[in-house]
Length: 464
Image (cartoon, rainbow, N blue to C red; front, side):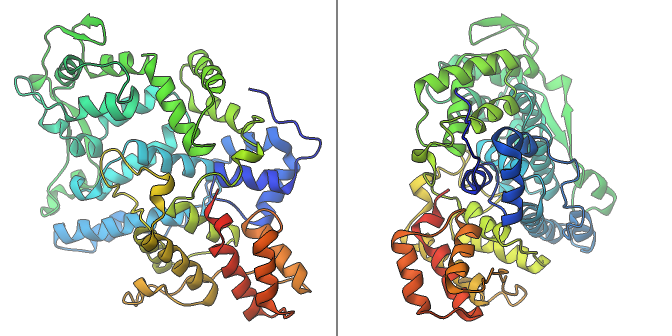
């Protein structure tokens, strides 16, 4: 793909990159990327400092768990803390691409906390997305196959010799690697399930204090006596395969790069990937061994990524909508506010750690309905007008989150600053006329809050 090489890398360019490769950012953050230019800006996002600026995360799952004597209720407290923990990371991380990619992988390897019933297993999985998400895809798949949350969610802990459970084996191909039409058969599902027999995990009973250490640190276990060590034929290969062999074979299948690259493209670029770009990225996948960072570097540096048709072309997820407005205004969240933002995203249609099913969120136009759009506008009104969203008013522990709004020395400057902050460019057309009509020549803090609401409620802001 041809690299993007403009005569001048504009603020709007850098804002587009940060919206897609992160969750938007403050004016100073965008300007810093703009100064680097299109190539170094991508490298900065790929290889940000090892300090992700979240060491002060107030949500300590172990502390929340140990505060309770009742183990079941303690895990409920830990699950609530898990929600706030990720919102805090999303809002404050200095590694936005890693966090955005963690959101992508969370939707890809969809796992529901309600079934897993262990907040620590879910946190382990979430951290794996940051640690392995930019590396080789085959390594990430193997980690997921051994992850206690995934093993529990897709019932592989029940997969034993003589009574194979096919849930994980099926989703490994259908949803995680090859895709529905990736060229596998029912026989492949059965043989794969046999290869994963004995793959389970060890944990503890949350109601037994002496087992708290095991509950808060679940670990992968290979139970050899439950492993089917017979010969197997899988995707055309034969041998005495185990789970590692299946991962190696399925991730090397030609359908896998096409399926994963297409999903990455739809998440980061546009709804449809041109066949020529798919071919180039597939060749890059093969030459790099399926390294995700190599693919994203090529995508984010490409001319097609910055094409006008691909700007403001994707409907923001609730996480992108809510976190984007916070990061754009560089707002800091109190713990209760993080939980409030989590609940706001929930009523907008995206509950972190609780995807609707194993397929994850469909995204796109499914993000928007009469109800979810109203809840988006409620959040925009709340953060600009210093009020709780109506659906959260019953939760008195959640104070309203207030955006720090830019105000210029004149009305035109305020409008320009608001556009630059939240859209990455100056408002124009119908939005500009509406803002001018609303302000009626006034430039006060109260007017600025109303103008900010108009920007956050505009069709353009709902798009990335």
